[in-house]
Amino acid sequence: MISKEAYDASVDYVCKAFAAAGIVITETEKKAIEVADFGLGMLDEVGLQLLVYVNTERCCAKEMVLKPFQTCPEHRHMDGVEGGKPYVGKEETFRVRRGTCYLYVDGAGDKNAIKAKIPPSPVTVFREIILREGDQYTMRPNTNHWFQAGPEGAIVSEFSTKSRDEADVFTDERIKRIPEVAG
Image (cartoon, rainbow, N blue to C red; front, top):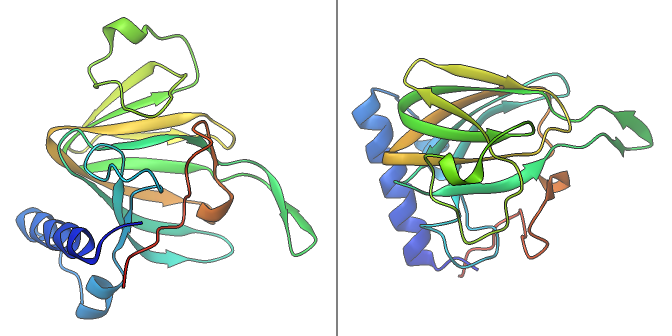
């Protein structure tokens, strides 16, 4: 569970990062910023701050903000069934707006040669894609991936098919995707 103080500090961090990057958000959007600690209680090491602009049956757009060396843990967006109808897992494109994002996906990679710090949550994929400002990368559905900000933090725009965050499958079985904020 995230303390109210940690939540407020993270929202403040996001608002300052957006302002520095020239990203304007409304007061309503500010109130919608999600702070995810994934239930691990290590927000600065394993966590993510995000703002969803739109999430419809066909598309999703969001901004993800990571503090320096903060990691979004390894997961994949699986095919599933919703309301009795099958769906294909999320396809997503990351585009870095600010900073550097170390992205790791399925495929050949050397754990001992990566730029990121190994997080305190299990990771199994080490094919490294380094995304700098203006770079983007598209992941197909069902791709194992995890990502981490560089030393200056990062703002990453995500463009995807429908997001079903509550259905993400994490390598670390301790993870709770939907955050809980203390009163």
